[in-house]
Amino acid sequence: MAGKAIKGKTLKLGDNISTDLITPGRYAHLRSDLPELAKHVLEDADPEFAARVQPGDILVAGRNFGLGSSREHAPVVIKMSGIRAILVKSVARIFFRNAINQGMPVLICDTDKIAAGDEVEINPDEGIIINTTTGVVLSCGKIPPLMSAILDEGGLIPYIQKHRDFVL
Amino acid sequence: MSNKGQTLAEKILNFKSPGVSAGDSAIVDIDLAFVQDTTGPLTMRQFNSSGFQYVANPEKTIIFLDHAAPSPNRQLSNDHLFLRQFAREKGIALSEVGNGVCHQLVAENFACPGDVIVGADSHTVTAGALGAFATGMGSSDIAVAMALGKTWLRVPESFLISLKGVFSRGVYAKDLILHLIGLIGADGATYKALEFDGEALADITISQRLTIANMAVEAGAKVGLFPSDELTRQFLAAQGRADCFQPLAPDADATYERTIVVDLSQLTPTVSLPHAVDNTCAVHEAKGTKVQQAFLGTCTNGRLDDLEIAAGILEGKKTHPSTRLLVAPASRRVLKEAISKGYIPALLEAGATILPPGCAACLGLHQGILGDGEACISTANRNFRGRMGNPEGLVYLASPATVATSAIYGEITDPREVL
Image (cartoon, rainbow over all chains, first blue to last red; front, side, top):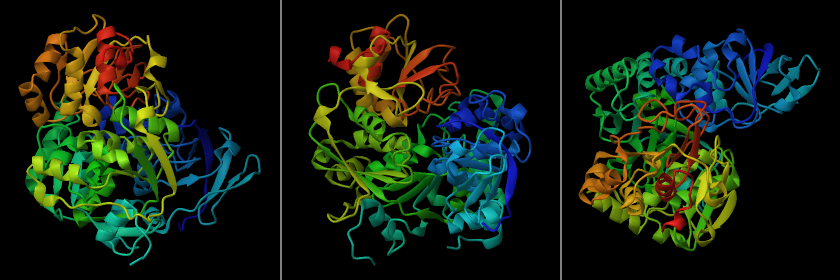
């Protein structure tokens, strides 16, 4: 990803944050009204999340983030909440693809080294994350080339508008 | 072309992109792309933004109305209107309310061995039971798949799940897949293909394979694949689709990242406790847990043999006064056959409420939302917090036999007590 560093304050969640926790099925009727749907982002995981999140914040979580449904509304509402990037120990496959397709970087690192409220600086090209609050430097896996190219364009739809095809 | 032995996943993807092996990225033509009514509207809006005007292969593109079927509110009704209009404009097929769950209809009518199938629903993996490389994606990916007629995939490494022995009394395919997910964990197979094989395969019906493949995603897997064999041929022939059969099997010298041997005869009835699918234990360990709702249906276990098992247990009995039993056949065909074979009358007589073919209570938007503190034992595939429409509800996952037995006793009960 030919991006510059992403800096922000972190909000932290635990392991196994499912898509049902991010955007529950009971709000399926709001999926064609995304601003209304986004008001309920993550409310079953943290009822205060929508009130606490600030534009530019970094979401930090544990294992298997985004497990479950293919609903792309999950990364959509996280993005609409103002989150700039997601740092996790591991991520479910479909959520990962959906987040990249929405232009939302998801990076894998040891998130035990990041506490809620820490400031972090993410350098995706170098594969490092600096916890500027503690000074700890973490390595993170690099995003595969095609997904990186999709991120560079801001998501899959802008990518396909420009390239009209996948370019491996 | 590589000379090394191929897994089933590699073999299918080589049909589309010759020479690829695990770890490679490939661009592949797709044989079927579909959406359902809760992912479809975003997919079609993404398609309309893509700059493409036409669907590349309208005859290989389907919209299913199954998740909100029939719609419980104005907003979802308007989503249905939007999808019907999109289908008309683009000349693509739409499966109406009441026809059944997308994955069941794909298995009955569309999936062929060797196909690559993508759907905007995570349980698209179900069609792996027929030897199709079928995987779930989000709306943007399906929108682009519709526009281009192809998608990109990373060829997965495979786990071999080698099955031997026979199920003992009261133990079914659902118990096997719940056991396996408990064993490897909800992220134990993330990005991998789960490939099922072994000497037991010849006794595992297509309906059972559909149950198993359906839940591969609950271990994080990209696909859950079965070889295409004589049972596959018979199933396709019974659907009037014998022409799409081809035998498929992995090479004997294929490379697997991990091999897990499961002896079916050692399995016991298994249940997933709230709020994680891998939070499994033996049903008898959960004995006595009160359930206010029992739900039989879904793409996991809403087929004819599932209803037969439940009807066999409930025939001549009554559901517990404190437990409501909801039954949603997976398709119109299943419902018709279950009526003619007497399963639906037996279930009705026992006290069941019959819901229309579709996803019904599974994902918490209608037809059986739990009250605060209520517990449901369900044949579905997910029990995440909030899944059945209420974060204060509790969902337990089990086989149709365990669900039917628990409906009689009003508490989680091992089906071997009645079988």
